[in-house]
Image (cartoon, rainbow, N blue to C red; front, top):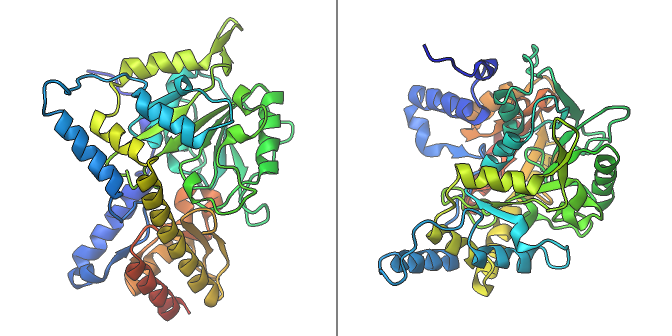
Length: 411
């Protein structure tokens, strides 16, 4: 009989968002009349249509595929030059990043998990708590952890507490040997953001300890404040110690269209079993070209259109709309006396539960009393207990209704 990967059996509970889906399904089956009133503010999925510039570019690319003289088969695994060049010109001008340090993919969620393929066993891995569950689960699947304790924390991971006291940006660990560090800012799930000074401290720590930072910048387009860097490569020395993941999912609405990219500086190195330095860039390139045939040509054309003048204006309108939603949600929660974080540089509002209510209790209360789906903070880690997250990805009409229900049911 074929042997399975036993590490998957360590994942006792289902992935957070399917579990939310299961509970919502059970609720709607028991309350079919409530379906029409249900508003989903749980999973961070966009709701507004793809920008017109992207749709047109995709249509044109599909038409090209219908003519023999413009048809394209397999594309370059690293991504078409027209998209990588557009990314450099519009996102990394002056930061010393070159187009051949960019790898186009079908999602940053995929990349943050797949990156573990090129790192060996025995690394000391640090994650923030609360945390985007993919970072934890993919390490469990890869065999980088032991079993989970009663709170769901896995042996073998270093948990960096993110609390109201540190404004959900973890302190630099003292006396702790760490090899790989996951940072996500603006943050999913808390909506918090890291200042330039805070990121500089992490870069200094990584360089001093020969560590590598996995920097998830999927929400950089939503940054409003000037002192919040959009890229870790804005910090001097980051090219020696960081990999950055970016996505078109949230700014361009590509959650269902799928396109993202990862930046790996050529000077970034790791160590092999014999103690020799090896370039991370070439290892990822080998993995990428072996296991991936590239994002589709029409999708890459659509992604490049994000950087056209029309695309920029349309994306800006989307971002403004979602951040306007976040402001309304913040204000509604504050109005009834709840403690609120996030929603300023990210489309997530992180809210303290009312006294005496835990995270899943809050989920059930919002679902049953307000017919609103939120995300329980405990689903993001033990430090998320006592909080819940509201996603601002929704129509303005729905968000206004959610605000009304929050005041009516929680006030």
